[in-house]
Length: 263
Image (cartoon, rainbow, N blue to C red):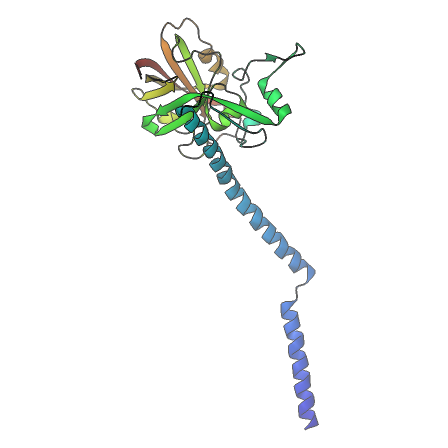
């Protein structure tokens, strides 16, 4: 009888030891588990974060579009300079199309971008909207092409012609990676397509007559062309899509001529 009880006690003890071994982890296994969970969380973040950022950019663009299409006298939106950042914008090759230096109270010059960075809050000024029916695009227009304006709008190069003026109005837009965002589908705007610019209560309709690609170093000659005696439009975005953000070697250019004014 005692032998039987002792065997049962030993069996119970062994069972408890086995259970303890099953629920316990050695330090290496625990470390690998934590590392695996961390990598999983990091992977989820990198998948989800761009979508969240895109949604914020699109929401800001929609807010500006509502303002420019409403009865607001001076349509503007503000946000922190470290918000709504577009991948690669810090490595943009072109610098000539940002706002020209402005003179401050001390008599020295500084760019609007630098001034905005000091203030930590930036303001984007809306001036109208652009519609390209063939690619189902509707976006607000900003009156500048600095990095902040291009985060939420298509930017009008300040030194180029306004819609009511003789000359070429130049508009820059990011070619976002997601299908249809901003100038992502500009390559699909073929000859004969229409581009509408809504500005100061009128709609300016342009008919596309050129769609071509140039090396980035040749962009300046297209933007700064002279002796234009008609009202034209030039839309610019990066190419190709799979290039490293901010380092695209080429630009897509879409040109058109004014065919109608309504409103």
